[in-house]
View 1 (cartoon, helix red, strand yellow):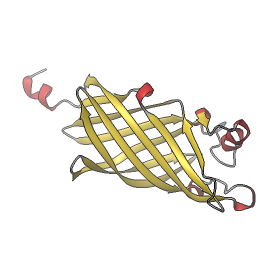
View 2 (spheres, helix red, strand yellow; view 1 turned 90 degrees about the horizontal axis):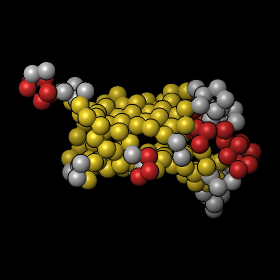
View 3 (cartoon, rainbow, N blue to C red; view 1 turned 45 degrees about the horizontal axis):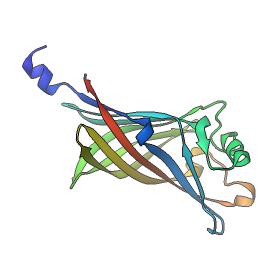
View 4 (cartoon, rainbow, N blue to C red; view 1 turned 30 degrees about the vertical axis):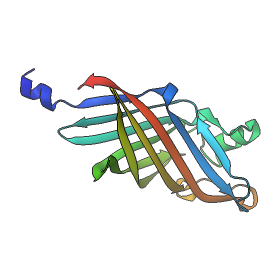
Length: 173
C-alpha cells in the first residue's frame, strides 16, 4: 500500500454497545402517557473516506423493551415489527453532508417490518478523544412501515426515534 492509498483509505468507527442507546417514543391517542422503549441489541458503523461518509445501524427487533412484557410481545407481532418474518430494523445512509458546527444532514433508508421508507435528519457528531459520539433524532410515520395504530387507533402514527451512539475507531479499510 502506498502512502497515498493509506491517506485516502476509508476510516471506520463501530458502535460501542455499552455506551450506546437506541430508543423510541410514541404518543397515545390522548397524549397523556407516551410509550417509551429501547432496543438492547444492535450494531452499527460510521465510515469516512474519499467516497464520502456512510452510516449503518442494524437493530435486533426482538430486543425491544418498553418495560411491559405483554406490550413487547404485541410489538413483536405482525401488527407492528413482524419479528418472525423481519427480525431486524436497519438504517443505511444514502447521503451524508456537513451542515456546519458539528452537524451532519443525513438521508437514508429505514427498513422495518418488511417495508423501506426514506428518512432525513440532522445528527450531531463530536470527538471524544479517539472515539466519536453521534446523536440523532427523527420522526417516522409508523403507518408507512405498515404498522398498526393499536386497538381503537390509540397510538398516534408519529414515532420519534432516538440514537445516542459512541463509536470506537476500528481501523482503516
